[in-house]
Image 1: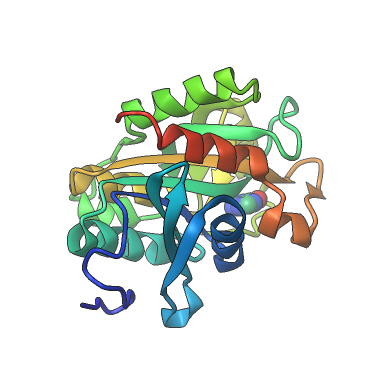
Image 2 (image 1 turned 90 degrees about the horizontal axis):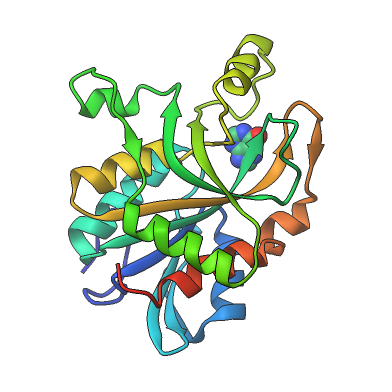
Length: 237
Ligand code: HPA
């Protein structure tokens, strides 16, 4: 079977899929954390793998950059491949003075400057929120593993490059922790289709301090976040 963007067999995906923007990071996670990992999608090089993490079947797939890309993969996974749980393991920007590069941020909900959820939600404001069980599991696992993380609100933007001071000040004023380009869309599609979603991000860019993690680290340098996501798949949702 095949969808326009995923060319995998019917049962190729596990119920839980970790997703990230970068296909190279998906391959890194599969090669370094899963055993018996098989590549199950190659269309547009939007790599996907299924393998085992401590006897639990887990899939990893990239979703590309931005909501239009991420939401189409999430929709096809849920509707055509019976995926029930999506955990995004991504990167994000930050504006708060209290947040540093490589901090781990967990999104309880996500605001957006995009119109994408309004298109689906009759032009009303949609509260794009995480699934509580997966969120709770991730936080408990992080505590158990002694990995520091912060939980709060995200801002999902259509513009990676946006130096508008007014926007940055509003994000600071409203205590936005992480700025990414996918979470609000992923949460809305999961809620619409009765699936569960959580977004965990590592800070790769500090927008105010103008600091950024190196390109090589963006592909592979976020092991604590990956460990939290994978270990949380072992708990009940
Ligand atoms: N802005 C938006 N999305 C991002 C950023 C950013 O600075 N860093 C990683 N994803």
